[in-house]
Length: 120
Ligand code: 5GP
Image 1 (cartoon, rainbow, N blue to C red):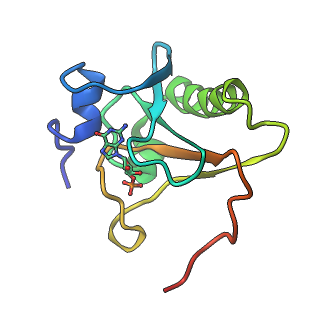
Image 2 (spheres, protein in one colour; image 1 turned 120 degrees about the vertical axis):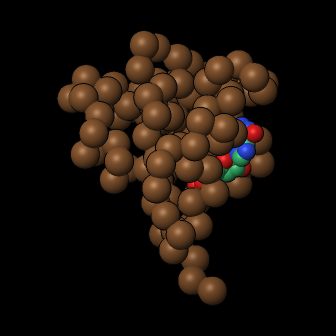
């Protein structure tokens, strides 16, 4: 599958659609989810064109990889969820219901986020 340059997060990175930005640096960008599932629900993405964690781990540079994870920790701290704890999650592909095909790490917090997986 090729990276789709018109996915919604690519448009956010290009400034073509608005977002509630939290933080950015050379390699990463963080913003609030438009449809929060918990009181704190942020998304951290690489600026590079990576579809998912598979693509990212195989093709991103060591600098991009370390930057993404450092940004997750930094953003969680800035959002005030570090002390009580939070969950990070990244959906990969169809069975995980990945909606946006640009790698993103969710940060859920601000409450007890419940069981690890909700089976239906
Ligand atoms: P996924 O299911 O792909 O892991 O998660 C995609 C997430 O992107 C969802 O939580 C959804 O609410 C969020 N999202 C989709 N479109 C937009 C948007 O235009 N702006 C923001 N801030 N979040 C979005």
